[in-house]
Every structure is written in structure tokens, then in C-alpha cells.
Length: 297
Image (cartoon, rainbow, N blue to C red):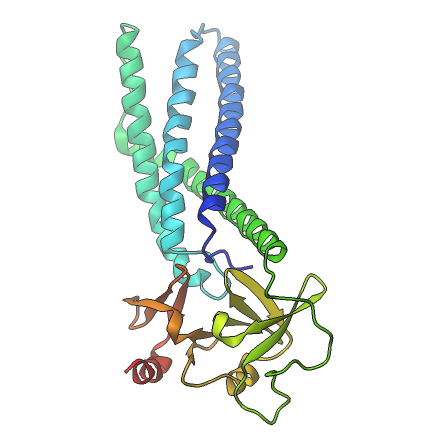
């Protein structure tokens, strides 16, 4: 299942709300634990610490972290962590830890200063850069934990969409193992329909409904109408059977239906990124760009 795939809007809203609620509970539980730990540690040192101070420290921190979660989710959509493309996205997320930490620390210092002023005292964060670097080490870890959490909720949403699509897809009826009309037997190089298997059932998919095809070892994943279907065949073998006027290789691991291309965006190192009509992003390698341009013209 590809985490760059577009979620159904209703599912996306539900997953987002559950994600934010889960993180609110998790962050709050961690804050409560840290508050009591701080009071206990200061007490062991012989210093009385008013409960509102550690509460201010922790709550200001989790509020800022929680508010930054949607920004991390947006950045993940721009640079998805997907099979075959995570190395390209990794530098973007490494860089993102810096503004994430600056916003987190700057926001919590402002909140703490406000609360301390209301309490009639002064909050001293200390020297900015040494203390920020200390906080950055913790923020670096928290950024990746939040990223993993967001990806996990997104994969759950994709699984949920897949289950619902299977239950409500009347046009894809179970078929026998006999070749279906239009399914190539090796003599006809142009397919009209594909037989794919999912959840121990076989389905017939019209080739015109296919958005893209992704290589996965000795298999391919066929993406059609928001679902992914595995098929036991190499990408090169399937490419020979598909209509070359409609399907084009854009990467060593991807075929796309040119009718599904919404836009082509400049990427890095001379490469481009294809955005399909459902919002899915596929890398376009330089070696395949000329063929795509010729086909589009």
C-alpha cells in the first residue's frame, strides 16, 4: 500500500481528527508525568517548586508541538515517505527539523513568558542558542516520532478506503481462473482488461480505469480508482501488453496512464515529478522524459 496515494476526503477528515485526538492524549500524559517528575526532582534537592511552574513548562511545550502536527502532515504530502522514493524525501525532512524546533521553542518561550507575567514574575530561558541546541536534540527525535505517527494513521486510512471500495464496487465481479475476454494470452499485444487478485478474490479491471502501475519485485501493483491490486507479472512484461499510446514508462519502477496526468512539476537533479488527477505523485526520470513529451504532443 502506497502512502502517497490520495485518501477519500471523508476518510481524510476522520483520520485527521483521530490522529489529533490521539496525539493530544499522548502528549498530555507525557506532560503530566514530567510535571510530577520535576516537582519530585526539585524536592529532592531541597527546593520547593510551585506546581504551576512545571505545569507551565510542559503545557506550553505540548501545545506548540500539537499545533505543529498539521504542518508536518502538509510537509509529508510534499515529500512522501514511499517505497522507491524515500531517499529523495529524506533530506527535506531532515531540514524540516530545524524550523520545527525553532517554532516549537520560540512558541513555548512566548507562552511561558506570558504566564509568568500574569503570575507577577519573570521567566528566564537563558542564553538562546545554547539552550535552543539542547532543545533541538529532543525536537529532532520528536519530529520523527510524529512523522511515523502521521504515516501510520494515513496507512490506516488507505486500508479503510480499500475495504470500503471492495464492498461497494459492483463492476468488479469475482471471476474464474479462465482468461477473460480482452485478457491477453500472449498473442495480442494490447490489453483491454486485466485480471488482478486481492483478498483471495479475482477481479476484472478495464485498462482504461488504470491510473498507474508500480513494480514490486516479481509482481506489479495496479492502481485503479483509488485501489491497489497486485498482479504476478513483471513491469516490463506488462508494459509490452499495454497500449503504448496510453501507458508510458516514466521511471524504472512506474508506468502511468497519460490520460490521468494533471501536471508535471520540476524536481531536483534535472528530474521531474508527475502529479496525477487523484493527487498521487510519481517521479519522472530524465531517461524517460523524451518519450513522455513525444506522446503528449
